[in-house]
Length: 288
Image (cartoon, rainbow, N blue to C red; front, side, top):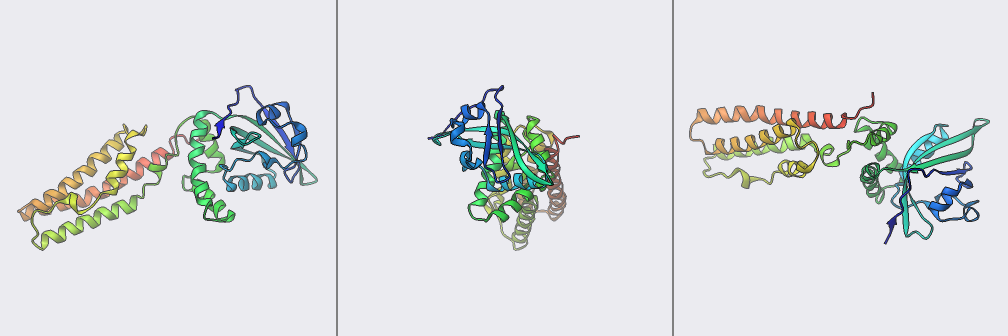
C-alpha cells in the first residue's frame, strides 16, 4: 500500500534536464525526498519518478508550454524510489533557450498544500478516467475543454487553487440544467395529459424519480448550501411538485388553469436560478 511522504515548508527540490527530459542535475533535497542518489538519477529520464495517477494530458500541456518557450506551473504527484511512497509538489518549470531552441529545463518544486492537493486530485481523477478509453490527443482536447467550460485558462485554474477556495465542485458544475428543465416540462405534460383523459388519484411522486431532487440532496453538504439562492432553488422546486399535485387533484378548471400558468413560469425561474448559482460559484474567485 502506498503512503504519502510530506515535504516541509522549507524544502526546495531542484532538477535540470535536457530538452529530451534526461536528468543532468539534482540538488540534495531531490535526493532526500526521492531517495535516489545523484548517481542513480544522472542520465535517467525524469519520468523515473512519474506516478501513474498523473494524467498524460497534463504532461502534454507542460511540454507544449516548454516548446513555446513559456514557463509553466503544475501540481505533480511523484514516486519515491521503491514505489511504496509518493509526494505532491507544486512545480515551477523554466525552459532555457539558446539559439531559439530549448537547451535545458529547470524545475523548482515546493510543498503543495492540503487544499491544493484535495482539489487537483478531483480534476486528475476525472482526466485519468477519460484517458483509460481514449488516446492522448483526445485526452488533451478533453483537458482543454474541461478548463474552457469553466471560463478558465490553465494559469487561472492554478491561481484559483492557490487562493485556498473551493471553486471546482464537480457536482454543481456538472448539473445539466437544460436536461432537468426538459424533464420537468415532460412531467408537467404527462400529468396534464392524464388529467385530460379523466384519470383520478394521480400521484405525482410515483410518476417519476426526480433526478434534480437527488442532485440537490447531494449538494446539501457543500459550503454554498446556505446561499440564499440555493435555499430558494430548493423551495421553488418543492413548490413546483406540490402545484403539479394540486393541479392533478383539482376539480375546478379555473384552479387548474391557475396552477398550470404558475408552474410554467416557475420551471423557467427555477433553472435560471440554478444557472446563476453555477456562474456565481465558478467566478467567486476570479482573479482581478
